[in-house]
Image (spheres, rainbow, N blue to C red):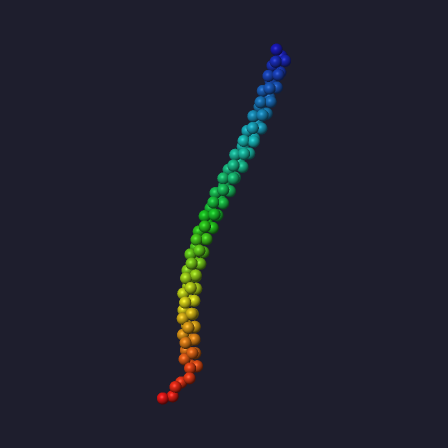
Length: 96
């Protein structure tokens, strides 16, 4: 009977140790999970900020592209009128 009680006490002690390790590991995993959740939220926030910046830059790029295209059209018109002016200057003038 004493042997059975000692064996039972040893088994209970092993169970207590296993439970203690389990509780420690569980607590550690919960901390790591909480940190991962925090990191995820920070990353999502940064992503959202970058998306906003990207959209702002895209809008600015579109505005600048439109201005460049408008300026190219104006420049081509000026160059055409300069070419036409030079052509008329180089034509011999007819005397009356």
